[in-house]
Image (cartoon, rainbow, N blue to C red; front, side, top):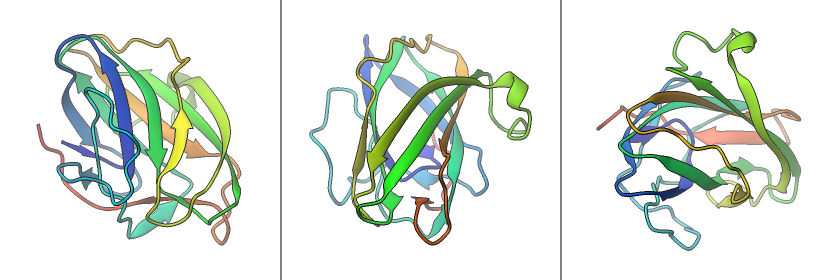
Length: 166
């Protein structure tokens, strides 16, 4: 599995969860087969990535295809720079995000939050436990995490290159 964010997805699901997570962003995704350097408490069904990010920008896109109905209850993001306030937006679309990065009419703003960046390589937690969106089994969804107050020298989402895996 891979995602484009250096993030830990907390997944609350019935049965088996993620079948596939693909990258689709301004850079390829990262492998999620290893543990983060500073994980939060792992929930049943968590999907984990590393927090090593060689690239940084205002956000990222990725796809998920679920094996059963599931909810995303939180994200641990790799946000720079320590102590800065980060205004986040989470967008979802039915189907792949690939090829639709510039078509805003197909995306739905699902969540917003302001969280404090913990710095490079560390987990900045975004609690999504009150989000009621259910990702239906067998469907592909595009997800975009966007840092609306992005500034290259003070606020960035870190990510690494990788390849999608089932």
